Structure formats: structure tokens, C-alpha cells
Length: 367
Image 1 (cartoon, helix red, strand yellow):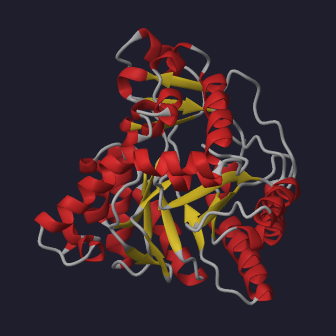
Image 2 (tube, helix red, strand yellow; image 1 turned 90 degrees about the vertical axis):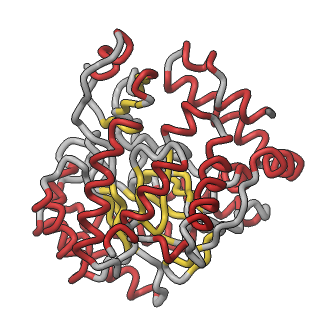
């Protein structure tokens, strides 16, 4: 099955600390996927078919991308593209470098196909990431697929100054992503979710729009929502997005809610603070996709994320209203074959359902 499978899908990795396993995976992907020979191997083994869709004025080979958090430091961008993802979101990135929360801070619940993380935006800071990406471009190691940057708030910056913090990071990374996701919904930075409050959010969106105006380039800005907000709070945020020129909604971030544990391992994982991702998140993510699509009448593209792990969950997210989708946990539990498996499934569903294109299927449930 190839080197990528032997690392990303290796059951032995589940026996060691989750963050250590992730670090090993990243080192290998960086080593393999950044060479042309490695990329050719990945493409040959895992390349999915084309199911093109135009979103944000760009053509994507298919809707499935890699969610933020896997490649926090934008270290293996060529590898994800070669593995078959049609787009990649790096980060979260903050204005200032930060170590994140104390370890251990990443946990698995295998029976639930779920992860719990309380990483806390560990990253080298926006300026260091920019240096890295300038170097990558100069070495001709920039993917031909769209790249998104996930932007978070620096922990040391008080919420009253959050707007400047987000805008500064957006300014620094502007030339090094095709679109930007404002992360105001991670549960792992104290007080971050308070930024979903109308006054804070209005201020953040205004500051980021000013940067975009100064740049004179209409790169999409997306907002990532929390699954733990009430439906009314979600609708309030969507209303504000419509007024503020937000280009897309990401539904959703991780949740602080927990399902009933199915094993001792699950009980231990769920006893930790932090955000849960993977299969248990899927139902709430779908609820929010449907809610947002219904409210916007499909006029603001939605990125569906949360428990996307199969052709069935992917298709459900699409007909509920997602133009694009992402996964993270499924790559950990299913290995790299999950990408082509899902995309092939989507392609078949488009054909079986009699649609002439994937875009016709987006939000079909609402017709």
C-alpha cells in the first residue's frame, strides 16, 4: 500500500502517545512528499478521480481538503496535494509564537473514531511561517492546488485587542494563502470563543476587511463556527457574516461535548479538556450545515467539516449544503486511502443521482 499508508494508517502508531505519533507522521510526509519522486509515488497510489467544482471563483479538482490542525506549520504542503487532497488548510497560526498547552494534549478514542485535542495553537508565529513559505516558493515547492491559512488569536493578546491581532496575522500571511479562515471557535485558548460575541466579531471582521481593501485583492475570508453554540447564536453569526462581507462559513470546529464512552480508552480520552473531532461530531456538524444553508439560501459557500470519514458522510454534507468538505480524524483512523475512497464515492453519487455536475448536488436536500 505504500509508505504513506504504512505511517499514517499504521495501527502501531495507535499504541504510542498521539502527539508523538502525529510528529512521526509529519516527519515522514515531509520527507516523502517534498520530493518529486515521493510525490509521483503518492499520486500513483492515492490519486483520486476528478469531480470538479467552482467555489470562491476558483476551480477545485474535487471538494475534499485537509482540515486545519494536521499540518500546523505548513511543512508538507506538497505531500497533501500529491496524496489527492484538492486543497489544504495550514495552521492555526497566531501573530506571536506560542508553545501551546502543556503535554499530553492529544488523545484518541479508537472505538468512537474520535480525537480529543487541547493543543492551544502551538506554532512558531506568523512571521516565521511567512519566512518558511517564501523559502518554499523560491524552491518551487508550492502546490498547484488552493491553500488556506487558518488564523487564531495569540494567547497573550487580550480580547479587546483581538481585531488588531487577527488583522496583523492576515497582513503577514496575505501573499502566502489563497483564502483565510478566521478561527474564533477553538475551545483550546481561554476566552477565544467569547470572540463570537457580536461586538468582538464585528470589530475583527472590520479590521480584516480593511487589510483586504489595502491589499486591493479579493481573497476569500471565511469564518469557522463552533458546534457548541445554539442555533440562534449560529444564525446571529451568519447574519453578521452576510452584513460584513464574509465569503464563506466553515461548519464546524471541534466540540467540548462528549458521547458516552465505549471503552476505558474512550473514558480516559473524554476526561480531558479540549476539542473533540471525528465521528461523534458529524451529526451536529450536519445540523449546522443545514441551518446555515437554509439561512443563506446557498449564497455563502459552506465548508463542511466534522466526522467526514466515508462517501456517505461526505455526500450527506454536500446535499445538506457544503460546496467544499474537509477531514482530519479520518486520515488518522483510515489512512491515506480515505481520500480517493471518498472522492470516488462522490463521483459515483453525482452520476447515479443524475446530476450533470457536483455543484447541482450542493444543498439538494433543501429543494
